[in-house]
Image (cartoon, rainbow, N blue to C red; front, side):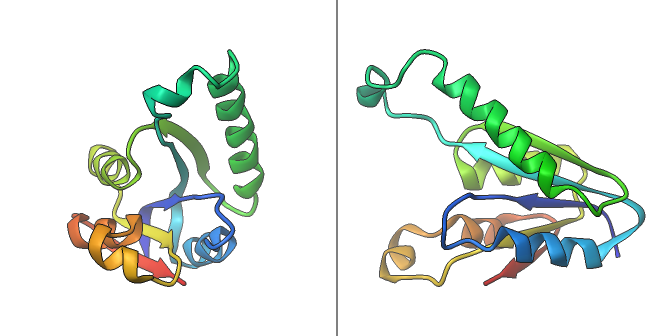
Length: 135
């Protein structure tokens, strides 16, 4: 059992966040905590001018609400939304906050993933803690 589990949540259709949360419920130790985590990728500079004022803050608030709804059923859980690059941000946050397990949902890898790599594969290759991948 793990004392601090990080569950990165992507709202993409091909990621099964619910399954990752279910696995985290089974793996967390009594008294342990689970952090549901979402990374907001930066909008490219050329596209910023097309985004309405306040969009980022409104999106962040909506994501926090969605994550908070997913925390039911946990004894100790919290929700975190940060800006950054998904793979690197997950790894850095996990190390800085003494995470001992990451439970991450992944899609079935396609040819592009073998050249560029997916977020889940980056986390698996570089995490300094246990990683459970859900497909």
